[in-house]
Amino acid sequence: MLALPPLLSTRWLIIGLSAFLAKQLVGDFLLQNQWMAFGKERTKGWIAPLLAHAGIHAALTTITFALLAPSLAWLGVIDFFVHCAIDRAKGLIGRRFGLTPENSHFWWLLGFDQVLHHATHAAFVVILAAYYSAPELS
Image (spheres, rainbow, N blue to C red):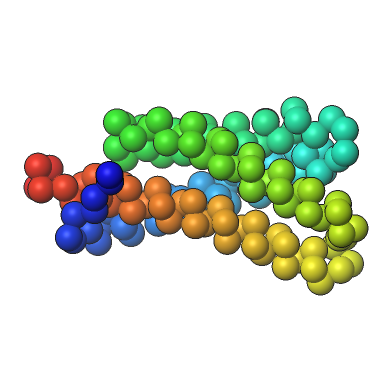
């Protein structure tokens, strides 16, 4: 069972939070092109755009950990699968209810999607801070 140290490094919480906020901005908005954004929402042909988009997130997470805590870079693989699941669920729910940008529920769903991505990153930030707060690293 994973045990957290009694105290987490504030420095690493701030570094991790900053890094993963930037990662989400880059991955979900700056590097996601129209093919990915609309393609992953389609009924058919959604797999390649979704995998490309989640692959960008996985790569960014891997790079982030490779720079900050190389032994945790494997978490990029976890991010790939979690990101795929969140975005696929968003696409299915949006299509099921016919949500479009003209509908307020579309924006609620997008907001919930972003909250889930940030919750994933919060877990990564805690893991990073715990890694640098472990007594044997002090």
